[in-house]
Image 1 (tube, helix red, strand yellow):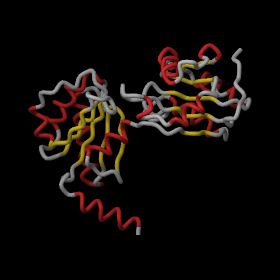
Image 2 (image 1 turned 30 degrees about the vertical axis):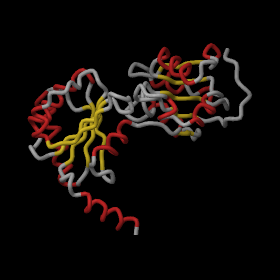
Image 3 (image 1 turned 180 degrees about the vertical axis):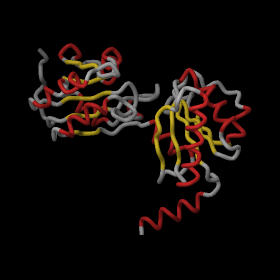
Image 4 (image 1 turned 90 degrees about the vertical axis):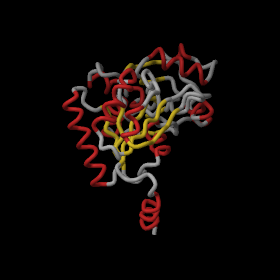
Length: 261
């Protein structure tokens, strides 16, 4: 049985962002988040051990032993996921934490949020870092039209086909295409992209976002990535492609102004 603090935080499903780099917490997470989290005793997490570590990092006096943790991953059944919301149905706040970044974005937390929405339960997203948006911000690509595509297929022939479709969509819609890869295969992904993208298609590789001294965000034509000698393996990375010349921001700015008018 968990002990509940004197509650001033409204009962809701709180989506709690986690740092995506190894920089100080106060550089990426608002102080207001800690006040809300301090009153939550039920958490839905990907990994209990790392969630406990995050909570203790944010507040060394956090009462971990008074908390209830539910683990949500690819092996969790839909019936279990629904049961995780029982405390919220009983008017108690519940927190959802990802392993990094914003929960429910490229993350199994979306499953529990979907159930909460169907039942009319209150959902509150807290402010925090998103490597997808931060990489887009720093890429120089179109931020008005973009799509996150998750992982590309593993098999080379299927991956090449998917990549050509993304490149065609990028050119047709002037839409930035964003995707990710398992970190230990990043170098292979860069080589594959350099080989299969059109030479003038722009490729941005954003790695170790918000990690001081490690962060690397570089945009250059695909042809120039063929000579890449930097090691990106085992580093969290985001990949972005765009088919419009990076030196042509005036057109994007003009379109943006017209929309605002």
